Length: 317
Image 1 (cartoon, helix red, strand yellow):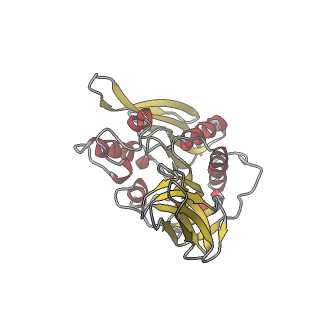
Image 2 (spheres, helix red, strand yellow; image 1 turned 180 degrees about the horizontal axis):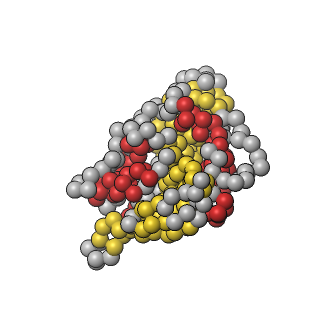
Image 3 (cartoon, one colour; image 1 turned 90 degrees about the vertical axis):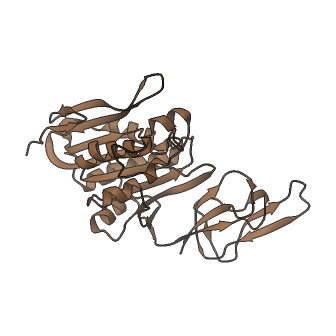
């Protein structure tokens, strides 16, 4: 069945067409307009409408490259449904290499937003209106916050059948059942009945080739699952994901210089040595041991830590 015309940002995208849109967000003090960049590929045939978003936190750039690679592979004449891609949601933070908006708000705590609210609230409302409301499924791409790094992982409501099916198809090393946070994009979209995957991988302000490759293949696997293309987009099958229900941060018992004894993806036994913390002169040290059995899914990158800092993130077995 022929796909209907899709209207986003006041622009009509006919079946079989690809359009680049600039939806105005706000004006800077210089009167320069900041816009939300959107690429829409409206397929020739009717089917699911998948949104892809990245850089909701402006310093998380792996997803920008993932979306670029995905868009280079998709042709509208072979597509069922539509791809609605927003490679840089937080343009303000992206320019400044900052997690936040100019009003210091976290955009991913501002959904569903309001057209009369703060800058963050207005941008969230615009995204919901022009992107989420036109979609049937969503994949939101993130990295760890500075100064941390994450093992590639899917976070999603695994109790929802369709979300679980998509998470399995993605094929990340881990899929973690995660409840939604107040004000997050995932929470706002889920309340509208839209299955959403949140992909976390790598670190801020860096391209991580492995994280990017897993992200690209994961999205293509989900598109294959949803039967969005006339032929398979990938030849490989999704890798089985380790399913996790609980995670825990191990924290520094004292301040000092951190010497990690483990790396991302390591399987950890209870009481195994995770790290040693010394002072600047090496005269005193504290050993940090694992409180549980699990897998290392995140860790701090900055060796200078304070007492109570989160240093190793474990997925509990």
